[in-house]
Image 1 (cartoon, rainbow, N blue to C red):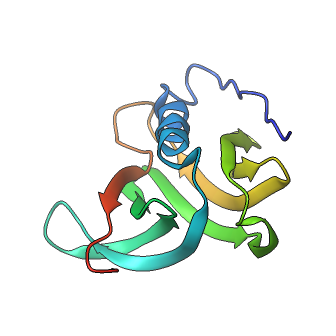
Image 2 (image 1 turned 180 degrees about the horizontal axis):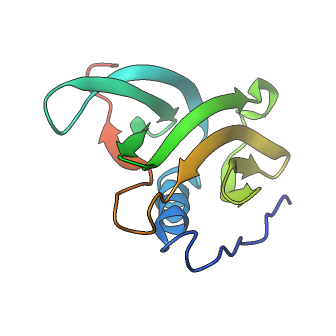
Length: 142
């Protein structure tokens, strides 16, 4: 079984936002299979649209990770690698390496999906960072 040890960052590097993001993603995907992973335009809280990374699960839910950018703080998906040969395996966990720069969504056979993430807390903890994560039900197959 693949496991990734929990990462610990310095107190001026992260205020728990990145750990909370990983926990939120873990809660949404563990116990399910990935049906699709793609970048799409999704609505923002201010009425526009923005690129988001969307993971569609076998339970009919979409897990959306939307980048954030607040002055000098940000979190952004730089790239992703879906291991198509492992998508039939149920996700057993989410872990990170490289100071939260690489996120691993894994099953018993290894990583199913890897995310390369750029991020900075900016001026420590004055500006917002971390993905905006939302979980939505599919409607009419969309």
